[in-house]
Image (cartoon, rainbow, N blue to C red; front, side, top):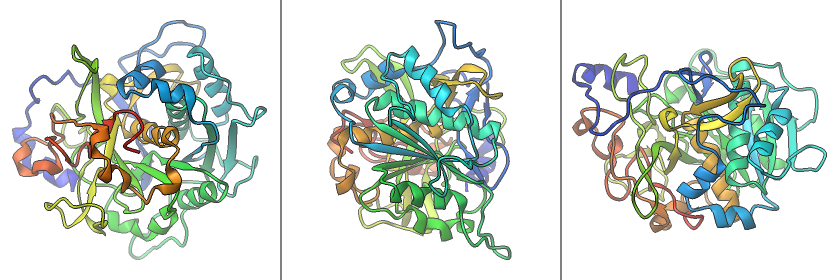
Length: 403
């Protein structure tokens, strides 16, 4: 959907008023039917661990922006946030230690029981092959959970691959990533973050929806990084679909401002960057969604910072990261929201993505920006406005009450 719509209006693309210049980025994952959704800044040099200064938002920024500092200081113990990714990051625990030490967060290690790395069968050891693209993704995910919920335990479940597809003619019989999600739920995860999405028609992947069906576990999924259009598993009715924003300091009572993360033109469609959103043609509309402009599942439900131009700092010693690195993409917003769910401690009462719909007043309503121009072509499915809109859902967390 995204490529079709962008191609149809490419000649009319203009930068939205007040938009910052598009940063130079590269996607972490570039091959396969399912790809991670991290975007790495290439115009900011990576900084070594020993260097005191580096760019990108840290934990204090995120806690301030989303009014989570008090909750993060008091809550999260007993919560087990699972990160599901493909392939192995052999340095995941060591890199996490650098991030947490730098920001003064309590140690989270295998030795103290806070951190567990497992394969998709739930074993500690016998990990899949390493993959430098997904290594950075895993570092981003565990760093974002740490930033938002420093008292949470973290379970990193590494799937054997991201190659599964149920395409017509050559259907796969199982999903490695899906089995990793089931493993996380079976081993007691209270929240499960999935920072990846499909390439190609959603219909090739919806056969795997059942892996994400875990009522009482808050399962989040990234909405995508390629502007207007829906991807799976964010389009599944069993997840909280997480869109992306641009987050900046502002002279207002909150101290921050947010707009839809959207492309500012140039190089479309191949280089289009912005949060995914829209109306699924393949997934049924959940009973808790009431927007009248989409007969299927509308993406997204909520959002958080994802613009690499206002990106987060992570530490990844792999080939793609090279140290302290600035990263964006909805791969950042999914684990942030999973961390907020953990701070709320409410996952046992959560039925899929429904909870924000009955607690809409507990979000910062994002009312400006679009991930598709001209916005008239898709209305609230691509353009922010008061109340619910697809790019940002009900908005971004204002404390923990919305989740």
